[in-house]
Figure 1 (cartoon, rainbow, N blue to C red):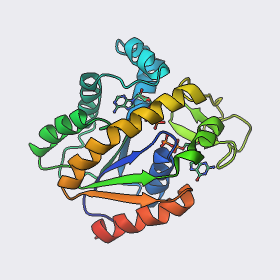
Figure 2: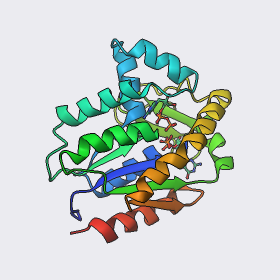
Figure 3: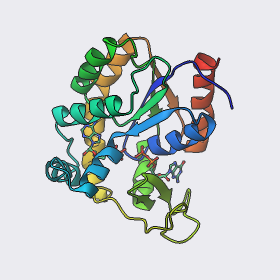
Length: 227
Ligand SMILES: Nc1nc2c(ncn2[C@@H]2O[C@H](COP(=O)(O)OP(=O)(O)O)[C@@H](O)[C@H]2O)c(=O)[nH]1
Ligand SMILES: Nc1ncnc2c1ncn2[C@@H]1O[C@H](COP(=O)(O)OP(=O)(O)O)[C@@H](O)[C@H]1O
């Protein structure tokens, strides 16, 4: 197992571009990396019926973003609860920050601890191919495991490979809501990329399948962070 210098990675990508898929491939290669998907955090809040779940599910169902202050609160408490801020921990963020304002908040907070994001990778996938992916996506909500009827089907039909529990379709994975999420992503991406390219940490990897993208992502990480 190859070891890395502390990696603090942000994966940017349109809905359905393969952020979750790339994360699970990376964790197989580098099991010591801690990962956090903002969408999974919200979905688990919703399944636990926590006090923010009502507001959150309304925004998610409409393909809108959950307010920045709610997200910053959720993610920063995750960092604290899991002690991610010690200097040796490698972590990966999927789906947060998603707005320039969230990026500024996170940066203010991380720079006090010298644990700032040191690699941002934009997954550049032809947006024509991702609607089909969304329509084929099934998820195991409690674990965040992601399946595809085409690309990586579960061993037993519509059952999670690990627990055997039923898979579900996400409420926001309809064509109409997906289009709103995609439009929102395209609107917000520019300022977010500017923020990180000014810091010299932004890279883009292109490819229309995750199997094309992954080797590029892997070599980018190994070139920069392998011990
Ligand atoms: N056909 C196809 N489906 C893929 C590919 N990569 C990921 N998927 C599937 O597409 C859907 C979206 O991928 P996901 O990783 O959830 O994207 P995210 O929304 O960016 O996290 C999931 O059902 C994946 O299993 C690919 O290269 N080809
Ligand atoms: N950083 C964030 N800021 C605001 N809302 C978010 C954030 N991350 C996730 N969400 C909400 O959760 C939904 C699902 O997010 P996610 O699982 O990352 O979907 P996808 O990767 O398909 O875009 C988003 O459409 C949005 O409503």
